[in-house]
Amino acid sequence: MAIVKPFKGIRPPKELVEQVESRPYDVLDSEEARAEAGDNEKSLYHIIKPEIDFPVGTSEYDPRVYEKAAENFQKFQDRGWLVQDYKEQYYIYAQTMNDKTQFGLVVCAHTDDYMKGNIKKHELTRRDKEEDRMKHVRVNNANIEPVFFAYPDNEVLDALINRYAVTQPEYDFIAPIDGFRHRFWCVADDNDIKTITAEFAKMPTLYIADGHHRSAAAALVGAEKQKQNPNHRGDEEYNYFMAVCFQASQLTILDYNRVVKDLNGLTSEQFLQALAKNFIVEDKGTDIYKPARLHEFSLYLDSHWYSLTAKPGTFDDSDAIGVLDVDISSRLILQDILNIGDLRSSQRIDFVGGLRGLGELKRRVDSGEMRMALALYPVSMKQIMDIADSGKIMPPKATWFEPKLRSGLVIHKLSY
Image 1 (cartoon, rainbow, N blue to C red):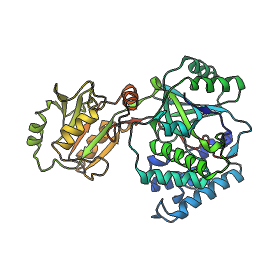
Image 2: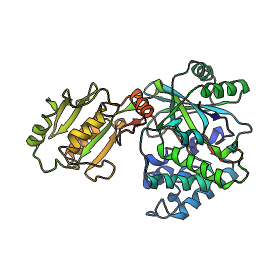
Image 3: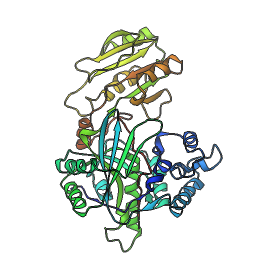
Image 4: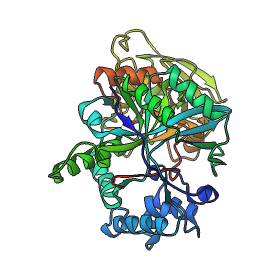
């Protein structure tokens, strides 16, 4: 069963939400955050990217930066830019991108569910990134930003959400830069709260869609606090961390594409010949060509687009990992031909989220920055869930979810 609970969210007054809310900490660098915050002292970037309050070049891992996050978090509360709700409740968060809306329930998930594997992951985490987020949670004694979960479709929860969706939301705004719409409702009715808790209790598993490092950090800090409290009971607020949970069928996963700096000493002709061993290679001309199905890839090289269709025998339909296009391309192109083994550390490769479009791949190759680009067909949510259920881990840089959650709509304190 999935244990969730309502919580007393800390959030901005309605009239301030657009000044406070921000993009997540990990989708932009320090200077982008500095530019977006500008002279807005209410921007959440002062809490999640507090290095912007120091001279340019200050490391985001400087101990003073973490201390500044806590100082700013307290200031936001003291000045009424963030206010705690009077009762424990759930929240509904809707995101609309390209006329498609997905509805999430904002809950507190249990750290034990993460530790026991009832909250399933599909990516590896890095200890240095975990420790960074753990420091941020510790110093603020709060989950400032939520993690992003998926759950199996549920008719009862769907009906409850739809009932709120036709009412006036607490927040309703269009985010700058991406232009996506964000709406937010409070679920304070006791009967609805009981329904949400009960329906999640029927679910054996929740799935991390995005935010693996935040999930790990939140659970590890909760475990720390359990050990540090000699009177630990199990119902303390630190046993829980904040998550936005979406029905799996509503989620949009975009392609996550690759750009590579060189051909490992090969000429273009030699590279195309090497590809022909495992792929059917077709020249599609100079117009942008997007993969139309699984096991088809688009290659951009020398101002031409090519389709690459994986030949039978190059993948295993019965293997949850081996059937993935990200695995096929990693094994047969990046590793075997280009000698790029570790996608996380190689300086010869970069990754481009599908929201930027294939035009961004063309631009980076045409500019001379990159030698070639490879576009992949998006992974499905079913594939992610199947892999998580099997206990396996997806290859790196496999999924790109859009829209991203906005931060600052609600915060969870680890003690009231």
